[in-house]
Length: 238
Image (cartoon, rainbow, N blue to C red; front, side, top):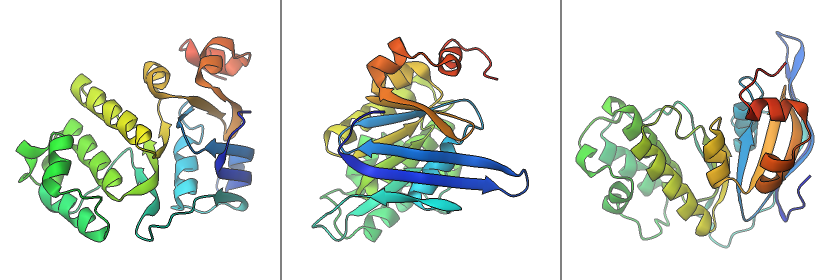
């Protein structure tokens, strides 16, 4: 287990599927620190997205606690924002979606809609309905909206899934910039090279349980867990 200045503390977290009569999430102890990009990995159905949704408060656990140890003098600064794997937007243009989020945030961090569109390379798409954007453009807009809420913690669920190389590069660049600027990033990805490029600590989840939480260098080179090594080799995990 990684030693951390705990920003997020998770204790005895259980989420049960009544239909399947099994635990979807079973995490006794997990912490995320204040100063890193944390990557969550694991096979399909492991519970990665569920964990993000629990941290965000989109769903509630059956038992357990998630404690966010964050104090801010800025009352308008939100604690957590999330970028979903399948984003949804207002039935408005790209520009109108961004303006709406900025107007909800009283402290706009001196950002204008133009600043946001330039940073995310969305100027040419400003008058296009958000739902008509290409896949890569939608991903960049989704990240732009999540960041524009001015949160301290940013949860990202497969932010570059099926993205073209340019979008992947752009999103990874912005993630690094946000982390350097003091934002806590928790990133779910299946992309092992991406996890190596971005991750400072890695959480590996299988069947709702944390099998390992280590600094990235140790995780990728010294893990002794059979399932983790199978995953990293591209083998089927049983």
